[in-house]
Image (cartoon, rainbow, N blue to C red; front, side, top):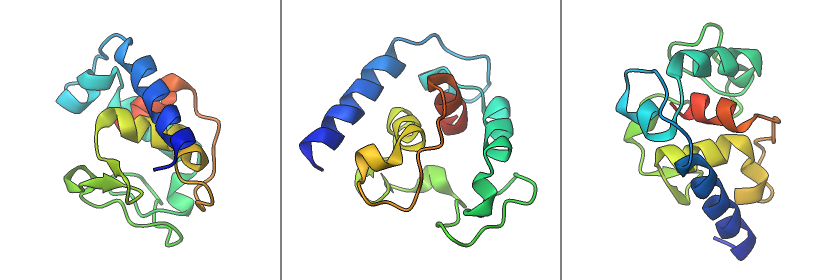
Length: 119
């Protein structure tokens, strides 16, 4: 990972670590202060299903990006970040900062929206 990407991840982790735990039942959600129900709404709102197949999200059957089946069981995000809640929130918030040249765009998610999606 390049120095700039490493710095971006560290900043995201620090920002997320200071957040209060969310109301969702999932341990993943509590770890980063996200709400998985709101995350599903954000995923639909931002059209993530145009590129990804996402279980549980209506009409999310895109074939451009990888399918997101069993995502929580994957070891890495984008082939380089350990799959942790904080790293996932950073990735969905600003993919090009972590992997320059990625096809996944920066969608303009707020910190809370990124935590909700990661949950």
